[in-house]
Image 1: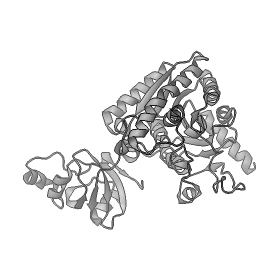
Image 2 (image 1 turned 180 degrees about the vertical axis):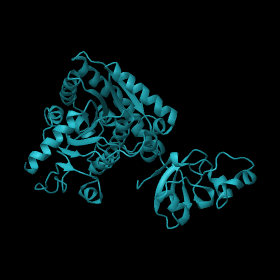
Image 3 (image 1 turned 90 degrees about the vertical axis):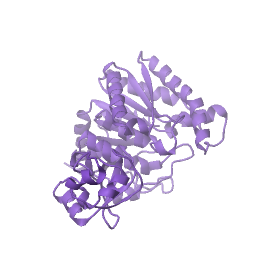
Image 4 (image 1 turned 90 degrees about the horizontal axis):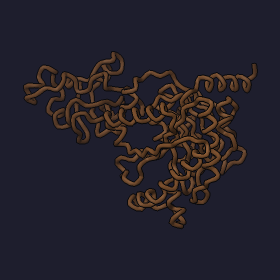
Length: 383
């Protein structure tokens, strides 16, 4: 068996197991010079409707609200300030959803709009509520269409881009495959816009530093994040055992080709899932609020023995945070060790650092836990 045949069989084996798909569609695919391109939405809706008729459950993460609003307003460039982006998104979101609704109505299929901010997924209860809503919609045969809620999101709670949002959604619903549709054929060794001879990479076994070197932050006038954000999203998704394919959304019948296992775009192979759903949420969804600095003994206990972090191993704190906040664990040379949920606020940790667990109550006049971070709420990560 030659290499090309082996790759083809590998793809076919992966897609054969797929039942639940998240499809991320970028602004560069959906718009033409900032104007919503209705024929593209119709074409993609036809493709997705065919998948649904074959029994696949599909969730769409769609960009395009801001670009759609820009087109309706007749603006030449995407707004820069947050209030302007929020206003333009409010103008464009209705048109975007109407276009999807009209396209799927032709197949007698219903869609549901879901707008999210990072805060919706960093709060554990709201995270679970969002999951339950999405699962219910899928069980009813409805196609959820998700976008970041640009009309209310501010920098502190933005996902950053819809590539990242699609990665979080893929884990939220335990998808089998994330398809990222963009304006290029996939991941190239070099930016094909600068080098027409650049080679398309058909398969990425693991996202590492070499793969990141291939990426470009160029995203065009209407996009955000470029190929690098897609690779970082693939890193998060594959870490949870989910396959990712980045391909051109401008190619006719691209989704059908992907599901048939044809060599379309770049396939990112799933890694062996080692994190529980909760730990993946801590590692990839939550933003850290501060750092806890630990000594060498605690570092060894956490890394090599799988222990919880006790106050005796803490030497300092950076930043201000409350109990339950997500924090990073760093050593005394500021090297990242992991992330976790703090059982005490930053001010309380400063009071008990270096102490034995038996001394906590005497010092604070209360005691939530023996551990500063329990192992069940800790993730060893390089993120």
